Image (cartoon, one colour):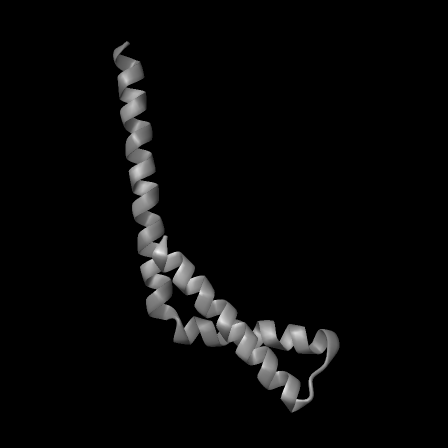
Length: 80
């Protein structure tokens, strides 16, 4: 969960930085928001790759644990 929160916090921070920079460059209104989303998305793809991998590993472990619990429950039901 920590990796997910950290990754999303960094994504939000990148968006805010892009928003501020584009505002001072002269973008306004919907163009400002659209460009900030685009720029921060591209930047996060390259800059946050390690954090994204850590988050994916964390989510994968949680899903694996959930599946194991489901399988254990299924096996115990099959015994009955």
